[in-house]
Length: 585
Ligand SMILES: Cc1cc2nc3c(=O)[nH]c(=O)nc-3n(C[C@H](O)[C@H](O)[C@H](O)COP(=O)(O)OP(=O)(O)OC[C@H]3O[C@@H](n4cnc5c(N)ncnc54)[C@H](O)[C@@H]3O)c2cc1C
Image 1 (cartoon, rainbow, N blue to C red):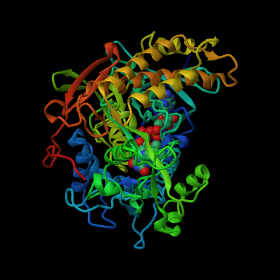
Image 2 (image 1 turned 90 degrees about the vertical axis):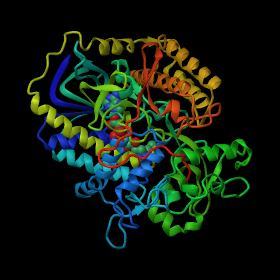
Image 3 (image 1 turned 45 degrees about the vertical axis):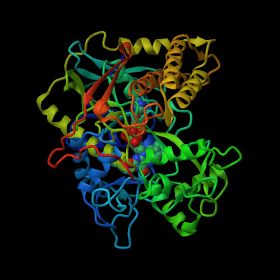
Image 4 (image 1 turned 180 degrees about the horizontal axis):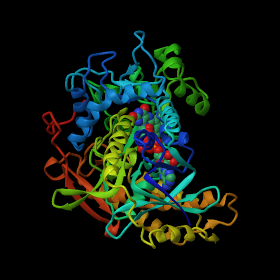
């Protein structure tokens, strides 16, 4: 098997991976970035509305208010040291992007354009803030392309269209790189590294209707799980309020930030009842539940009363064309209507993975060692949507994910740079280190007749949608867990279709399904275990938040489907903490 050696291996070329890579390459570390799709096709490219930073370009603002909103938005499950770090670092992260060449939209003053997003306030819960820095509604596209160009300039080494299969570690649990497959020829390669950073994005493909790219299959999370690292807070999956009904494509929160609002079948602005102050710009979990409730109670729109409407036509065609051009194109393509004239049918759709691989604020993967204490895993880091640092807690605020990937991509790289100074040589790789990955590859050489991968994947995503959606309860979650376990069993005997024209991509689909099944199990099991409602996790049978029992992070391990818990880091770095309060908007 081919073997290559680097100081750092980064698995994932989205915003998180590329921000880390740039920092490392600029510090003259030898960096390899592996991506299963060409880097600029990574999912970050789809981010629309913008990135949060308290620049105060439109209205007064500061990072303390941003921090308060993020803690409150997280339903007090976010770790306050990491949240403080992120909110303080936000303005610098955005100015850095400006210098990397991101073409932000501009205000008349020439400053970076900012728009209102959900859950943002001034003065600790007061009037709406305007904090989201945007490049029209194509902010992710602008960021990803700029970061890629900067990395090419900094001579980062890319393995484009390589699929990482398994992490490699030695007997002491030190992580030493990964085994990947070259998608073009199916050949495995061992990439040896002194440090490995997982930046593989989220797992939106768990659900049938979602806003995510097809490649978002939780590969990094599943690799970590299989390597014995528990996943944190997987029960918290964000459903975005405004996916195009029945299709799932995202209509950015920026559309409501520009003044759009929601209407039910009676023509009522129903958010006034659920969130009297913030209305349509309440936090995402609140708006999603409100829409689902309107539909459940028969006040939906359409022949089946199964969606609501997002109204933008009152904004005027100029604003829609200038500030939301991508949304307008998408709606015209998929619905054949112009949102400048006709309201858009919307319904909540699976969007963002709040949980993931547990890390500290330096991006180091951490595992519990004894009651309440945890230890870094040697050689392993995680950043971006695959990680749980945790700045989003039980519910992420819009605009905070692009910020998360930039701030913690950079922070992890800075930590790695320090580590590399002390570690001049590669540790020896055990002879059998690649065996698990090679066995997995061999398993999916098997072609023939049997249950097809595509059919099993469709059943998995339907089971998750039916059993682990916006509203949950014990019986339904239990059925969901059984369904996922049964599918996991059946996957053992599945085959790759004989007639597959593109064999290597079919093998990847099989391995992605293995990853999806493991992350589905983590999600549904963690949801079953948490008997309270908090943020995006809404239990009909336990409708209240219960800080006494449940103000803690969950940890799911594959072995015996074990659940464990650890405390929330309530203490910020320099300011007073925000103690839990009733959360209203
Ligand atoms: C439609 C949409 C709009 C959004 N808009 C916003 C917004 O306006 N503001 C905001 O803050 N957030 C937004 N988000 C969320 C945000 O875009 C993502 O959370 C963020 O971009 C994730 O970045 P990442 O670097 O963690 O992962 P990604 O960008 O998803 O990149 C993952 C990378 O990992 C690679 N990879 C995965 N598995 C493997 C493997 N096995 N082998 C090799 N490579 C692998 C992929 O090829 C890819 O390069 C939006 C999300 C969606 C879905």
